[in-house]
Image (cartoon, one colour):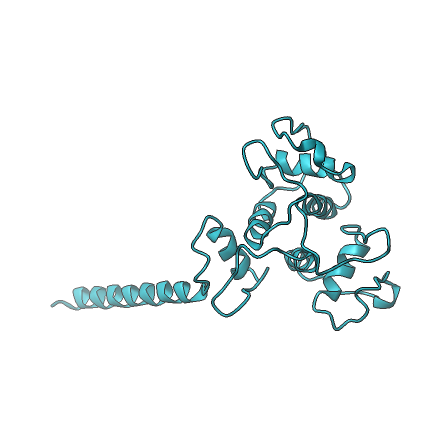
Length: 216
């Protein structure tokens, strides 16, 4: 064998070995055995980008409902985990009393940037499941936050959904905007189910779509 052919054989062998190692590493990098489903690409995106982890070492639990705290934490991570500049100036929620809560920074970052607000009684209710209509409101505010306050409005009417009249008044514009941008789909062909809570699979899918939405 000539030196040139031998060198080529070595290069090809090294290349094939490298590709095998990379392929094996990529397979190992996605550990969730319950994520082989319609949302797999978005789950993988969320995992690889540090947006969320699994519920255990090899479980993602895609059908488990997402809490309000978990949803805001995912958004905070998407934003690059902005630090709290002056914690003492931040408004407080009586049900998030200390900084020991894992979602403390995320919630107060979102609150002080106008992305979320508490309930009428002043609470945040972090462990409540996030409703689909509230998720639409929050992602719309987050998008406007990224646009430095420039609001983007929707032309969508939602007339194809028979339950559009059940959307809360405060959420209607955001739900229509989310539908128009393709961030949220109907639960069926003619229902939007605004009061239903969102699963982990649904949330990461919507956030994945949001990450690809260009700013205005």
